[in-house]
Image 1 (tube, rainbow, N blue to C red):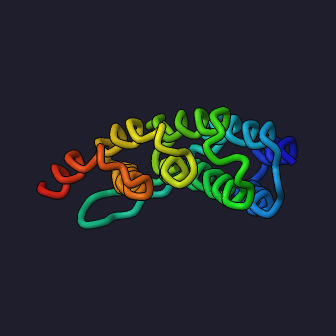
Image 2 (image 1 turned 45 degrees about the horizontal axis):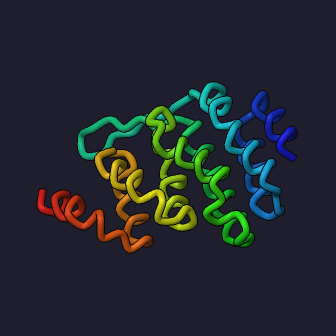
Length: 163
């Protein structure tokens, strides 16, 4: 299944999105989950097209790869939700953390940040606190910290909400 997705990188993005949707419904093993995360750099390079829109007199640019990366995070969320054995699995969540911290993946990181809070465990609280300062994913980081009941982040959150 992963090889089929890699082939899809040369085809239109709609086909890749369809393949990702199919993955949400199958059970992957740990190696396949790791491979799925590892194709993200190739997706970033292959889908650099973008669209722009105006919001409150500001031009917003969104890249194709951001939606695809976000979709991979959602596929992972669905798989991990069904298969508890993958929750807090270090080999998976180290890679999830790498994606969440890498700013070049833009808004695509949102679902990865939420994964850290939903299934990564308390070991990722410091990472999530760091991400509060990232304007692209700060809301998702606060949400993830709330899921973890991370009182360590209380002061940082209070500072943000007082602005």
